[in-house]
Length: 148
Image (cartoon, rainbow, N blue to C red):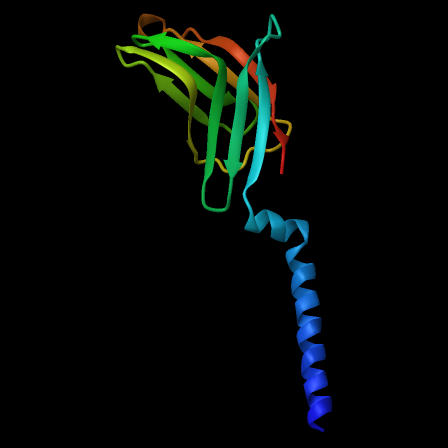
């Protein structure tokens, strides 16, 4: 009787292990467990020159967005660079020189809007600030693709 009881425990444990591996390998479980990353190549709308890359790291606890600029950009005084999304949900991450001179290779922030859906358009926008703060220049744009 002991050996059949031991065999049944081994079988039950093996069945539970197989069930756990199956459940944890479903796409929903993987997405809930690991961070997902999305990206967009940012190109100038007129010249189609590469200006940088947008990267989003999304988890259940926090979403961060950042722009990696190539080449680096220098802003001065009240000038601002911002990342914005053009579709229905809105987020913004920006950096201002605040009276000085700032050379940027990358900038970003936490996003309160959650994960950005694939297919969304991301824009890199420049503003001279000051009296011309309402002047917005589209420096680059790209479409978000999910990478994991």
